[in-house]
Structures are given as C-alpha cells and as structure tokens.
Length: 121
Image (cartoon, rainbow, N blue to C red):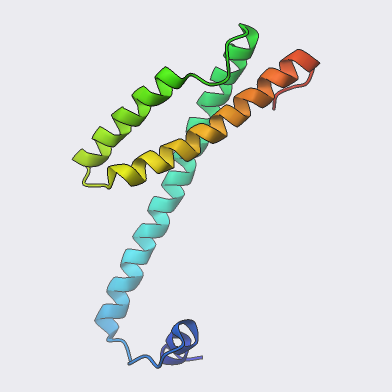
C-alpha cells in the first residue's frame, strides 16, 4: 500500500502525496515522541517502585494508605511545575490524580496483604 493509500485508509479521505522533507521531519518528530514515551514509562516504573516501598512502610506501621494532605501538596506542586513548563495545569492535575489513585490502590492491597499474611507484591 502506498503512502497515499495508507493515509486514505487511516483517515477515510484521499490524501495528497507528502513531500519527502515533510515525511522525514514527521518521522524524526515521531521518533522523538516514541523516545519520550519510553522515558515516561521508565520514570513511572521508578516512581511506582518508590511508592511500593512507601506502601510497605505504611503497612508495617499501620499508617493509612492515603495521605490527603500530602496528595493536595503534590497536586499544588505539580500544577506549579506544569505552569512553568507551559503545560496545562488541569491536565497535569488529572494525570497526577490518576497516578495517586493507582498508588492508593497498591497501598490498600499491601496493607490488606500485611494483615492477611500475603506478600503485597
């Protein structure tokens, strides 16, 4: 299938032939996006390794899985970072809230496993 046919199949509308320089720049930019996505995934994995350790520490000392004051502080901090990075603070907050919800879910599971003799892994 040619580039034109591929574009037509993906969008449902006929596509004009893309200039080679444009195609090269598009490929370069997409390669950068792919690298950034990989870095984001690896950074999230590292973050979750740390939060797992926090969850085990909380469970060992019977601390609650959630810490609303810390979460609010982190949301405010991230919103400020987003603003300075020219990223929509509302988007950054939604992303952090999603991550926090997952962390709390992990902490709840770890605490439950600690009470019931599981591994929490």
